[in-house]
Length: 201
Image (cartoon, rainbow, N blue to C red; front, side, top):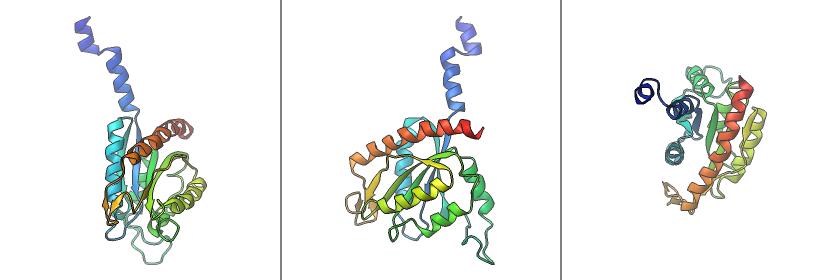
């Protein structure tokens, strides 16, 4: 049996290979493009926590890497639109890193969301926000947009405070409890993503 196991693999090995092959792709979308933004710090932290779980393929997607002028603006260089579409389409679910600007999400994130339609449909998402009140108001605005785009957004919502989770408002040093909140969010995102994979196929 030892030789056959080496040749064909054990049932446990096959099961692990199947799990690896069927892992969902989760895009961690950075929702700000302004100079001096802190979203890359938050996104890297979320990815580090997520990768330890081993339950999905997590990728950071930075909208600043794509040329997305205001949708419909004449003369704008929208050469990044096709790449943006491809990057979002290959994801099965998302985690949005959201910062609050004037009680809402950034114009850059709203614009990036508006560029696409079907690429968002029937997928799941979690939200990690930050701001003076944890980005709560931006999150509520984003939930309405995601609902229109047929994105199932989960209830658990890590909310980071500029006063307690950042030093001087710029250096990200989250309280220990925030890591638990991220994992609780992902505990909801992953099963919803798995379920919605069947809807799209």
